[in-house]
Amino acid sequence: TVFYGAEDREPLWIDDSGLTDKATALLKELGNADDYGLDAKAYAIAGLNDALSNEEQRATAEIKLTNAVLLYARHAQGGRLSRQQAGSQLTHTPVVSPAEDILGKLAEQDDPAFFLRSLHPVHPQFAALRARLKEARGGDGKQAGPKIPDGPVLRVGVAHAQVKLLRQRLGLLKAGDNEQDEKAKTFDDALKQAVMAFQKKSGLAEDGVVGGGTRKVLNGQSPERLITKLLINMERWRLLPDDLDGAANTYVWANIPELRVRIVQSGKTVFSERTIVGQVQNKTPVFSDTMEWIELHPTWFVPASIKVADILTSLRRPTS
Image (cartoon, rainbow, N blue to C red; front, side):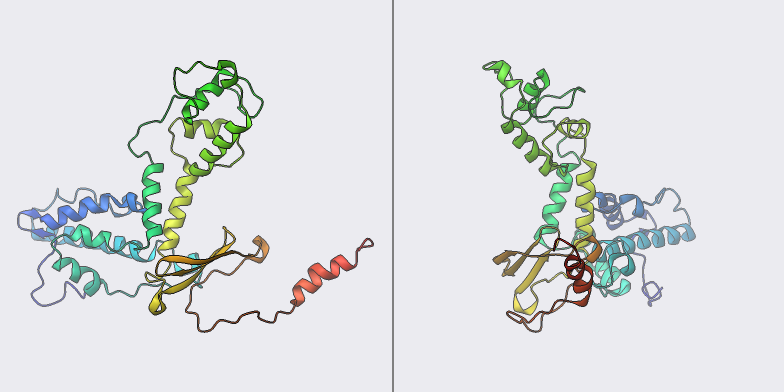
């Protein structure tokens, strides 16, 4: 209302002849939302170009596309979760004016699609996740190595013709190589390590066993578990400040699931150390904030909760 209520405001996306070039570019970019970890269906507008014969229809189409663009912009910058869903301790909340910061800038852009893409997180980690997502969803669609048909579970000690196919699939044996044929058909520890490396890359459980799930991913089926992880982590980056370094050009990064803390300066890790994190029932808090001081070797007293729940319970055991 603020944007279109301005004096002499002209439509951005629709003119007397239909959709403008900017509108066409935006629709194409909205359709590519899946590539950035979003859901393209959320911004799809069915039949937008079908009913533009009168002024009312053109105005309706204009507003529909504007609403889709603003929704995309909000999701790209701040994520699709509410503050309550994401956790109130995360401090990144983009403060933007839909009229000035989004629509106003889009009106000035020769390439509005480029502007939409610029709204996504600028962190290198987000770009790496996006590239991995594209790869996980199929990449060029080519399968590396032979297909492994349905069959028995393959694990250490199993001797089967499919073990040789597995070696070929993982690049441990060239197709047509019949040397030591019987040995190639036996699942050994070296093959287990190769399977575990593949499972880790694909986001699968790293057990070194080729069952139904690992077999499907080996044969080119999208690893849904990995894709889900990638989408979740891309969403997490939208909840973090664009400038992690701040004015100090330095930040401390505690990676909870990795159990590691890093100090990053000018984009390079200058210190890395393992750290202790809480268990599920005693979660490490998640937050981002500006550090105001650093205390080395701080005094720490055992909290009452640990005294009562852990230490006292241990002391009461007869064998303590």
